[in-house]
Figure (cartoon, rainbow, N blue to C red):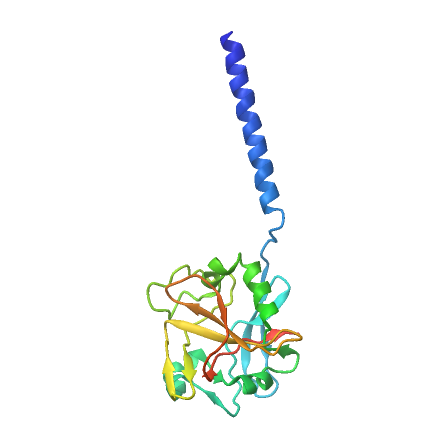
Amino acid sequence: MYKNIIFSIIITFVISIFFSACDNISKNKNIVPLSIEFGKFIDPRDNNTYKTVKINEQTWFAENLNFASDSSWFYNNDSIKYGIYKRFYTFEQAKKACPSGWHIPTESDWLILINTLGGKNSAGGKLKSEIKWKNPNIGATNSSGFSALPSGYYDIKMGTFFLERINTSFWVAPNKDSIEVKYFSIYNDDSTAIINKPYKEYGLSVRCLKD
C-alpha cells in the first residue's frame, strides 16, 4: 500500500515537471537568440571612424554621429568637455547627415530593436552604457553593445542644453506613408525605451542604421 502511494507521488511529480517544461518551451518558442557582432566603419567624407554593432539582422553605429554640418552642435557648444557625446542635429540636417549606405532609423526600425531586446520595459537598460549616466543608472547592462551615452538634448528656441547625464534622445524618421517625426529616448532612472513625438524644435543625437 505504501509503495503504491509513494509510486503515485513520484509519477505525479514527474508529470508536473514534464508539463511545466512543455509550458516554458511554448512560452519561449518565439524568442530569438541574441546575436552581437562588433565592427567599425570609416566615413569617407571626413575619415571619422565609428564603432558598429550588428544586433541580430540590424547593423547600427555604436556611437553617435559626429559629421560636421550646418545646424549641428556639441553639448554646451563645448567639443572638448562634451565631445564624447558627438553632435546634435535638427531633423532636417539629420536626414542628410548619415553617410551613404546608412540612414536615420524609422519607428519600425527602432521597434525591431526594442522587441529584439525583450520589449520596451527592459530594452533601455540593455542599450545604456554603464558609464557617464547619473546614478541610479537603472537596468544598465549594455548587453546589446549599443553603448548609449547620456548626451541630453538641445532646445533650439530657448538656446539651452538640457539633461546631460540624465537622458539621451535620438531622431526617429517617419515610417513609409507617414509624415510623423518622432524621437527615441532613454533615462537614467528607468530601463524603459520611449518613442515620442517632439513638441518643440530640438537638436537631438543621431544613430545611423545600415541600409
